[in-house]
Amino acid sequence: MNGLARRPETPQPETAASWETDSDARRRSPAVARNRAPIAAVLPDLLPASGCVLEIASGTGEHVAHFAEVFPALDWQPSDPEPSSLASIASWTSGLNNVSTPVAIDATEPGWPVERADAIYCANMVHIAPWEATLGLMAGASAVLASGAPLILYGPYLRGDVATASSNLDFDGSLKSRDARWGLRSVEDVCAAAEVRGLAFERLIEMPANNLILVFRKA
Image 1 (tube, rainbow, N blue to C red):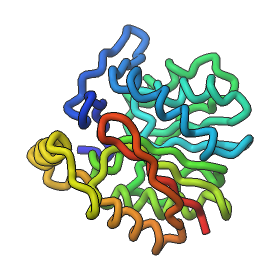
Image 2: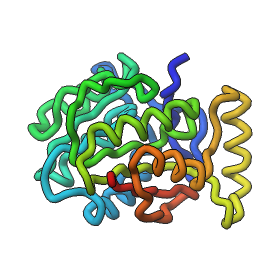
Image 3: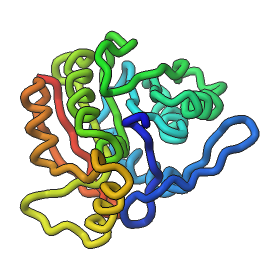
Image 4: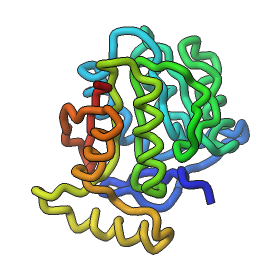
């Protein structure tokens, strides 16, 4: 099983896949319809004014298609390890001049086919993948980001100083029952993994449905 399998989000935590697939290979995730606007609302303060944004684990491709229209001055590079996801991404982004052809990237593997990015965005991968995927994401981000460039993560996390919502605890148990390598990660562990790979934690942003955005900067 590929470590980067993605699942869409419910109004509380994210659960099993429920996307629909059109005849043109385009997948539709109810999660993106709910979360793309709140995410886009905070991105202007995080993204550069111009340059290339690399998305890791693009999934259906709906996020990158939406963000490319909202932020036309940026060039977007989607990626995913799954051929079916790459087909969906290509369908969603067809005709968008500021979106490059999606490339295959597995965060657990070194040597990404992207040499440089001005920002990296990754949603809902960290908890639905082995911990090695998070470590690979941090290593890859450190390799391709310039000094001061952001790594932006979105999804549910655990926090040592904040009580975890019961729905997120249930979700964590559900993930681990499906794959013992999966599960909600603590903000503290993710920050520690980033720090040793040259990525400094900048801020945490509370998002709807018990999700967070974590922002790191390349040192």
